Length: 120
Length: 161
Image (cartoon, rainbow over all chains, first blue to last red; front, side, top):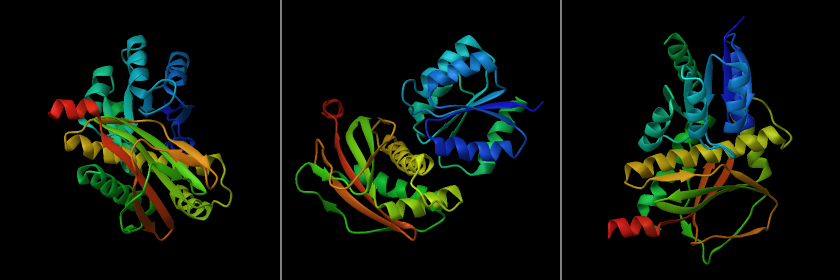
């Protein structure tokens, strides 16, 4: 069975692009459209890695990262956001994220971040 | 509007458009809208900015431009403006605004942004808190009119005083 990645982004377009990149590498993909859905999916499915947007309705990616890491301290969460502010990176890593990539990204950047964090 | 507020948006839009469309954008002449009313085009993505700089950013374009831009973003021919195409156009605005606010932080202004909203239909009037600076950007896939209705927040001004 392949490793499972949970894609969390309110943009259907972005989830579709990421799914195409990662499914082609053999990963099983789960999707969530906001932070609350991501927390529920993590508790239910225990994915190997989470790719998490920040700016989302209902619950943002920072709050979701914090909630997931409190429930599952070993969770591997890579932030994938259009926001690259230093302050945001600090908040994300404090919440428990292990890596941070900014949009727009090249497919290679995503794959490198996924492989780096799965190997850690 | 202060140059240090709009320059990050021009640079951010160029950076994002180059990357996602693989096309060289061009900027048209800047103009300041008179009054605080913005009238929508066929498609308008609205993103709120809050923090040291406050207001809204509106990305307006025609359906024709949106279909061509969405096609290029998705690597597939898009003939219908469906949920996926709408999501791609909103995400383009999100990436430009996200990149711009990252640059604003480097200039000393910390900001956050809201998820994008898409308004469809010509002639809807949106009242902004400050007159918008109109920044026309063209690409070979279509034209985007970036409207920046942004001002430094009272909190930021008080801190600087």
